[in-house]
Length: 179
Image 1 (tube, rainbow, N blue to C red):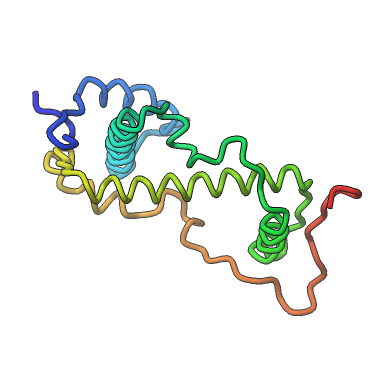
Image 2 (cartoon, rainbow, N blue to C red):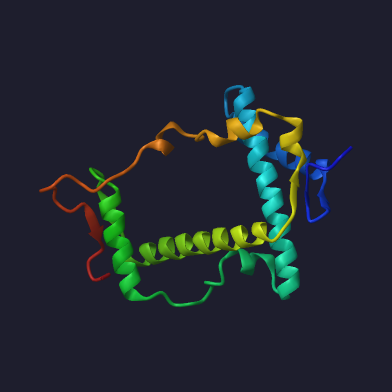
């Protein structure tokens, strides 16, 4: 059987894909039945995860580092600029109109670190993808996969959040003495 995908000629096996699909299907189904479109989205997501994993594994091996360290964006153990945390807190408040937010500075730092790591990971993956030859055999097998995968998984994912209405009181609550 042909592989699910290939990254620079290295196959991603159907067996590994099926194993991951079997593990994730009960989580995706929940109490209902997984629709055909939902199955397409899940298959596309899993194929993307396996492709990204192969790209990160190869780059980590090339650099002589652990894949987890590479995937974290190299931010482990590095202090964050306090001004960046302040900007993050203000942006968080502005992006959640009508919602009360209670967050400690330590929680904000952890969330910012996670956001920065995800951004660095996506930048790295984009760079690795640009330099790799990727063949997605799954998309060839399932022609509806790309169209189904392009739809948001959750209806609210399309909603844009804007700043709170003028005159609204601040909803961001930083724990006393935590600023």
